[in-house]
Each structure stands twice: as structure tokens, then as C-alpha cells.
Image (cartoon, rainbow, N blue to C red):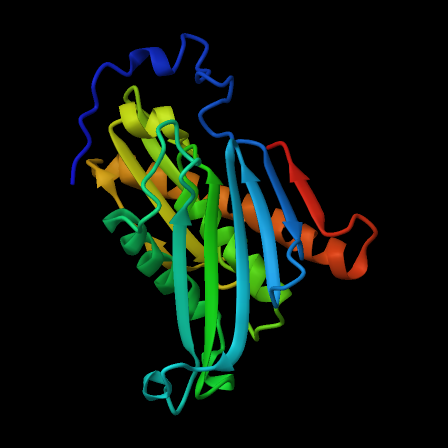
Amino acid sequence: MGKAGGDSAALINEQGLRLDGRRIDELRPIRIEVGILRNADGSAYIQFGKNKIMAAVYGPKEVHPKHSALPDKSVLRCRYHMSPFSTEERKNPAPSRREIEISKVIREALEPALMLEDYPRTAIDVFVEVLQSDGGSRCAGISAASVALADAGINMRDLVSACAAGKVAGQIVMDVDDTEDKEGQADLPIAIMPMSSQVTLLQLDGQLNDEEFHKAFNFALDGCRRVYQLQREALIGKYFGNNGGNSDGGL
């Protein structure tokens, strides 16, 4: 599926700054909070630019219906949902095709990091609720869900960190926002397990030549590693520090 592109020259000025004042290799401000929901086994809240997203984890728990249980590992179930008030125009609360697709993408991005074999015949439910959307919500949701899983005490090989890069006004940029996503020429979200550099998500919407793809991939990879530091700081802050599980990054 390609992007229209349109007249996007105004998205980057002569000084190389984007509409929100960022440089091409700069992330939006990020804030992560851990353990914000009392009734969930694990939870996290992320502000990624103007995205505001809550993630909650329940489990491991008994599977219903029982015939859907797996004998050798836990069943990971993910639901990504955008609240009706999360976009400029009121969104239909019923799950859209896009939300169903992103739910699948999030599950597949998280699964390699989880030791599901440690919890046979159980289910782990992950809920990602978008309260406010501004482009890049799947990456922000993956990052928040990963922190929530760690907060729930699920055995993990690593956290999963996600970020996107894109092509805007003919230039490769890090972390596209909603305007850049709609008016740019390409969007490349990725997710990684930072300690092993294993890629768990890679999608491309639009077209990039070989040189552009490698630059965009490296931009997104660098963004993932910066997100990872904030995820770690938020978790360390909750369990070993005094900041209540908050991590701020004005990157």
C-alpha cells in the first residue's frame, strides 16, 4: 500500500527543522510511567509526542474456553483499541480492520521476547488503549505493552522497543508524527529486542530506494535504542528508585 506523498515541502524548512521544531534525527518527547493501574497484573502509560497510551496485562491465568489452551506454552492475546475521543473526528468504538491488524502486529512483535513456555495451559492478555493518537501509536503501544509485561513479572528474554522512521519532503526523518505520516512519502515502523538486536517488527508503507531504506532503518533502530533506555529507567525507577516509576525523555 503506497502513500500519496502530496506537496510536503513545507514540512521541513530551510534550516532543516520540521513543523514541530525537531531536527530530522530527533524523537518527540517521551514519558513512561509504570504500575499505574491497581487492578491489572502489570501496567504502563506512555506519552510519545502527543500520543497518550495505556497498556494493561492480565495473567498468566486460566484459559477460557479451555480447548484453546496450549499444552506447552501460554497463549498471548493482544487487543489494540483507539478510544472514540482519541482522534480529531469521533471514532466508531467498534474494532476497525486497522485495529484488528495492529493487534496482530503487536502480538507478533512481543512474542519473541516472552518465555511463554514457562506458563503452559494459560493465557496472557495485553490491552493497549489509545487515549490520544498522533502518529506512531503502534510503536508507542508496543513499547508500553513491553513495560507492562515486565511490570506483571512475566519472564522475558528482553524488552521490546519500537520506533518508526519515514520519508518526508524527500528526506529521511526519525519518528514521524501524524501530519508527517499523512503527507509524507513513506513510513517504516520497526521493533527490536535491544540486547540481541533481533528485529521483531518491520513494516513499510510507501516506497524507499535501497539507500533511503538503509538510512530509515538505521534512524528507526537508533530511535528504538533511545526508547529502550527510557523503558529501563522507568522500570528501575519503580522497583529500585524514588521517582515512582516515571521516566521522561526530551530527546
